[in-house]
Image 1: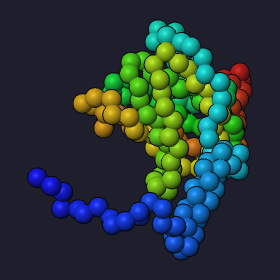
Image 2: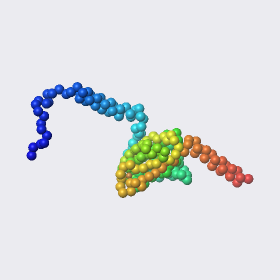
Image 3: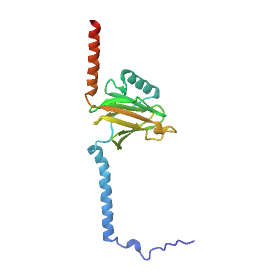
Image 4: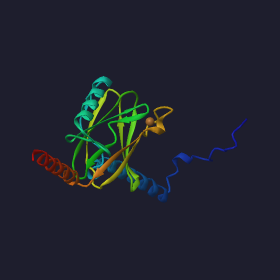
Length: 203
Ligand SMILES: [Cu+2]
């Protein structure tokens, strides 16, 4: 069976490209070069690419770290409030460990991210702008320390965005971010109450 497409007649290969077609080719070439360069430029201009060191770890070691973090932190009615600026979280089939966490706006935290089993995606979305998100990857055997700072108070949802098994859709967690200074104010009220109670007891 022969092809229904007939070969072009004559020496078509030697025919010069039309000027308009050449202009298109140049336009495409220049556009692709600019877009390629912009990928590199965006790392510096956009400041959106997460950085931070990564360390080798094991499931057992990392589980111990998260347990110690939960032990040191303060358990509030809204979740764990870290003792310092280090926040330890981990993915596991099919839940997140270390959550919910209560953090403050404007504070740069060191988010330690790992997983106890398989790869999980770590997607953070602000409740008022769910279309905006930051995606990180939790890789078994590695502890990634990512600097994070929340600018707006509110709830930030965490979902797994790497299909990890049948319960993947259940992997949901929350950061509760409170305005800067409010946690101290709450502490002061609590401390005041304790002081008053102690004074009353002493009498
Ligand atoms: Cu998943």
